[in-house]
Image (cartoon, rainbow, N blue to C red):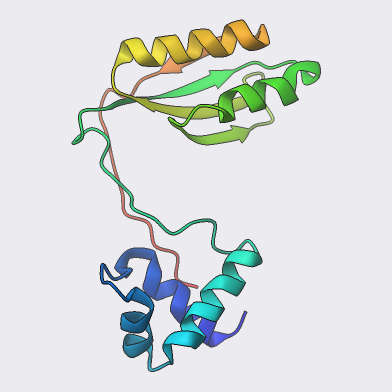
Length: 148
């Protein structure tokens, strides 16, 4: 990764243009050619540096609810549990931790009842019953950009 890649990453984190030709707009901002920006973003994606480019929505403003979940998953059930969790489109994060509760994930759904249904389905599919839901009482949302 060189300085141009770093400049592109810094620019697209929070200022990705909403335009019919966003890479041309980026190119103009950065003093580069559109084809070069496209090629570099593709290369950064292929290398796994860029995970995704997409919208980031305020789920509460859209009427959804969310919760942080933690599960104590035995090693022999880990692969099946992770597969079951990842199969749900409302799962936004899924992390393994070195703790009794060794898998943490977030669920976003239209209602608390839907979240209970999702967690119940995961429990039925995997047999993992030590699963807790920790809904937020107050949201503290911060904007994070990483200067590369």
